[in-house]
Image (cartoon, rainbow, N blue to C red; front, side, top):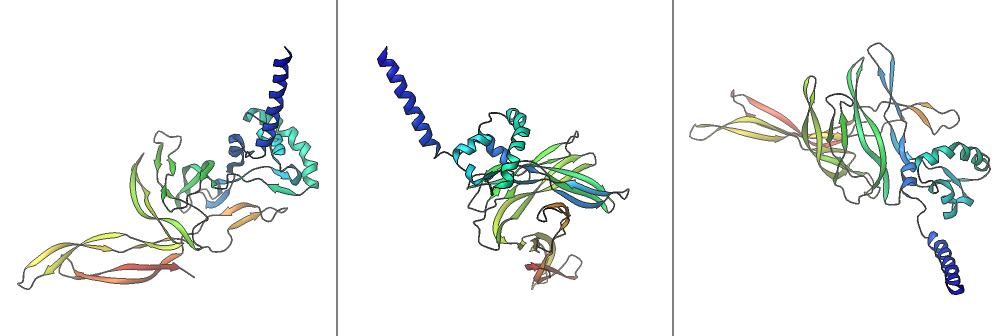
Length: 320
């Protein structure tokens, strides 16, 4: 009996030693911690007035780090376990939330704070889905995109198209989810360049008023913030041959479009008195100031025997 008991004590000691050593090399953030850190936050945007003249503000949401602050002495793995990681469920965490916040208040006020990252070093906190809300404002109908939930996504080093789900006509018989697509985002791109959509398609959504046409992203490229994209138009052209014969052809012209935007001023309408860096209410984003910089002309003879000239955009710039 003495040998098995001694062996048991030896194994217990070995287990405790390995747990302490390995614990120092394991990321204290478990799945529950990551979901708590990367979460949707309120982000109110002022849109204008409705048809009754009342102001309209919408919580469009925002994905951002939401980890609790930890003092420098609690930045070790053991302190991390005493914080979020020890809770196996959301219910258990909520039950102890008030007690933890009361006890931690005094310590947080007396010691320097550090913020734990919301996601891993190779991840970013991004929306998992968007909802398109339609509002009737004084100046006309308006569609607003609202963040529903957030999660940690892997940062991509290449500029590629990524899935982006949007829900249209939510909570109605016409509710539809469409992958409208988006472009990968990363801080590793050259300064002044972004991964932006350059090729588009469309999808049809049934509505009480027949159908809506929704633009979707097909391809992305690395470009400056204000950039030109192809936009093809077709015209009938009459070609006169030397023998006097007229031939009707289909003429294709890439007239182009300017996309992107330029940063203009501060859109914060209401800041926190105690924390000027915290904005409670944002103004609605202005329309893009990315405009054509240069162009070229295309002249041809139309079906009525009249010379027609079509201008096409060759480059774009930010309007000053």
